[in-house]
Structure formats: C-alpha cells, structure tokens
Amino acid sequence: MGEGEGRPPRPGRRCGWRAAAGLVAALASAQPAAPAGAPGRVVSINLCTDQLAMMLAAPGQLVSVSSMARDPRMSAMVAEAAEHHVNHGGAEAVFRLDPDLVLAGRHTTRATVRLLRRLGVPVEEFAPARDFDDVRANIARVGAALGREGAAEALVAEFDARLAALRAEAGRAPEAALYYANSFTAGAESLAGHILAAAGLSNIAPQGGVLPLERLIMRAPELVVRGARYPGGSRAEEVLAHPALRALLAGRPAAPLADADWVCGTPHLLRAVGRLRDARETLE
Image 1 (cartoon, rainbow, N blue to C red):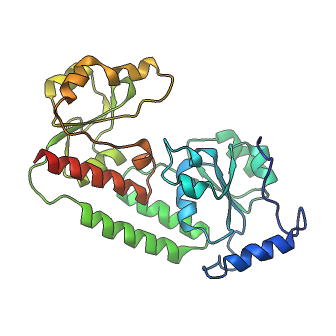
Image 2: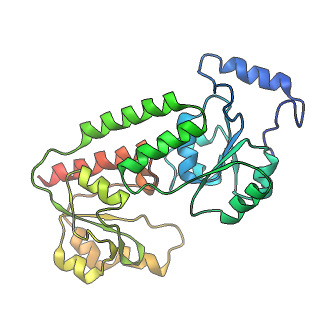
C-alpha cells in the first residue's frame, strides 16, 4: 500500500461515509470525545508526537500516525499504532487526509511542514525533550492542541507519581556510561542523562560528545548502556562489538534497554528508569 492508499475518508466531505462515522461514534460513546472547537482530524508525522497523540486523543480524533510508530525497534506503542492509518510524512499524502491539525517534530520532514503551511494546513511543531520538564511541557502542549487539557493534566500527574516511586534513594551512585555508534555518548543534560540520574547512576561523560573506546576501557564504569545494533551493520556500529568492550562488559550486569524505551520524551521512558534502577541495585 503506497502513501495515501487506504486513507481514512472524511465523513460527509469526501466519500459520504456518514453511516460509518456514526457507527464509530456509537462504539466510542463510552469514552470522552473532543470538545467543540477542537480539531476533529489530527495527523502526526513524527514518532514522538505519534505516541503523545495516541495517549491523549479522543476516540476518532487521531486519523493517522507516522509509519515509524509501527517499528518495534523505535516505538513503544506498536500495538496502538496498528489501530491507526499510517503515513510516510509526504506532504501530498498528508494533505489528502484533510487534517485540521498536523503534529510534527521540529527537526524532521521540513519540506512537508513548509508545504503544508503554504497550503493553509495548521502545523504544530515539537522539539525533542531534553529533560523531564520538557516531557511535561510537550504533554501539556499536545493536550492543548487537541483540546484535551484534562487528559494531559492527568497524564502528567501519573508520570510524576510513577517517576517519584522509581527514583533511587540518595546514596552511592555507581559510574555508568552511555555508549552509541561512532563512540558517541549523551551528556548529563540530555534526556538520557537525566534518566541515568533518576536511576541513581553517575554519568562518566557529563559533557557528552565522543567517548573514545580507550577512555571508556580505562575508566571501566560499573555499567555500560550500549546503543542497539541494527540489521545490516555499519562501520559506525562496529565499536559496539569490539573485543575490548566485550571484555569490559563480561561479569557486569546488563542494562537491557531498547531504543523504544527512551528515544522519545514520553511517559514510556519510565521503563528505562526502572530497568536502570534494577541494574543499579544488582551492582549493590
């Protein structure tokens, strides 16, 4: 199925499927609907806004999410995404969905955003979350854009309660390293850095940037969180399978994290906090 094929029609405007729309409304009647004046057809073209929208939208309000929402390597909501039409971020296909609002990332699909705005389609752009305050702010913004402020407030409250329960108590903070392709590491002020800190771990490279393998081996942190390797391989990822790194990891607790756990600033990142806290407790 290509872009635009199988797109959900707009009841009463494109295909006259008023009966189908009425059936959907009846099935969703037990759940709160979007208030009057809120966008009735929302399209998301970014992985992170996909997930926030799926968590907050009223029944029938979200008509399409990006294809990445169905990628289990990156998305924490694959099952939920299967219930939605997917788009590939192309302006023509998104425009044919006749959206009242498009949710986009600030650094992706730039040509699509520009063209949609020229065509008069409202677009809300979201920057990647860098800390927990950004997570809260983006939840609130999506909620406001969808007319779902109450749902957003409840989600933020639940996020804060779960985060408070997961935060490690003050005490020894074992050294940990975040290690990705090309020897890149995330610093203390990144979202990943804040997740490490919430789990009670100390980042050995608080400034972020490149962490040479030799420096990592000499520092010998108690925990190393490696980036995921993808099928096909690349030179950038070879460092993640280096024999010296394998030797360092031998006998140390594993941190079984998937990119889907924390690639986006959503409440799903609490899974990463919990798993890192478990690894920290194993060290102690």
